[in-house]
Image (cartoon, rainbow, N blue to C red; front, side):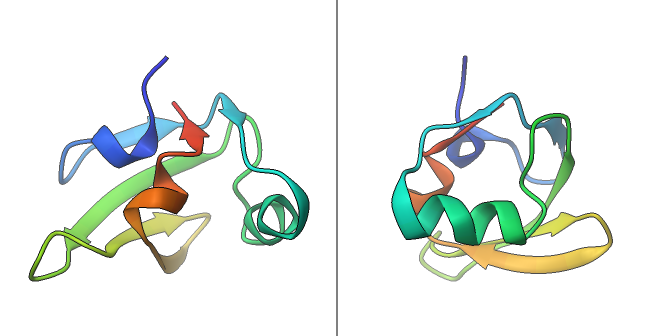
Length: 72
């Protein structure tokens, strides 16, 4: 499985699993990053970090280390 960190700009991917734990896992679940959720890669920051994603109609920004915990 690959991570959300490696998803190409403009692609739409499906969340397979979260490998985050504790409060970060709770935050991701609250943002809608649940198994089966569709995530669109919108744009990357000037230095490539953070990246903006559209999840369930909402745009959020995740740092690379956070996105690497979301398996697609």
